[in-house]
Amino acid sequence: MEEINLRRLNEARHARVAAILVTYVDTGTERVLLEGEVIDELLSGLVSQSFLTGRSCLAEVEGRKCFLNIHLPAPRLAIIGAVHIGQTLAQMALLAGFDTRVIDPRTAFATKDRFPGVALLADWPVDALDRYTAMVAVTHDPKIDDDPIGEALLSHWNAGIDHP
Image 1: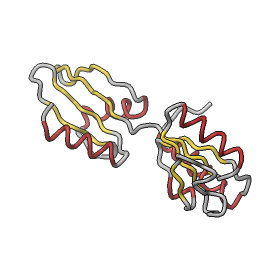
Image 2 (image 1 turned 180 degrees about the horizontal axis):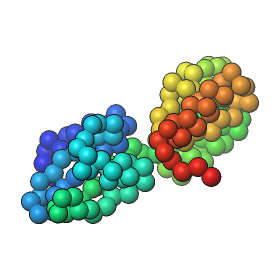
Image 3 (image 1 turned 90 degrees about the vertical axis):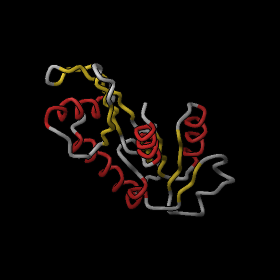
Image 4 (image 1 turned 120 degrees about the vertical axis):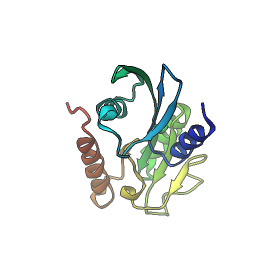
């Protein structure tokens, strides 16, 4: 892999942006495409599908084989609400290997003593989520829970993710 492409993939990973390394099999030439970038129409459908499914694939474009290697941000779990249920859930998520954070604007609840080893954000939840973050809302306070739930549903709907 070319150093410039490795650097670009690492930058995307740190910024939590999905990326695809496209490698043309016949020549070995490669390029990185970031989610949201404008790309040529020939690859557009394949790239969109790879971003949605999270699956790498071998494809043919204009008679040339290319490998699309997808790089999605690591899954993250946001627990909204520094309540007793969140304490147990956070420890279980850490054991399962999730990048876990507890988000609650009520700083009296979100303390290091109650959530050892967990990233704490004293912020409004809607400002701390992205489309690669799973969310659990446990405050049972509509002022805190409702907006991020709505945003999460809209982001999945707008991304074209299958709905039951």
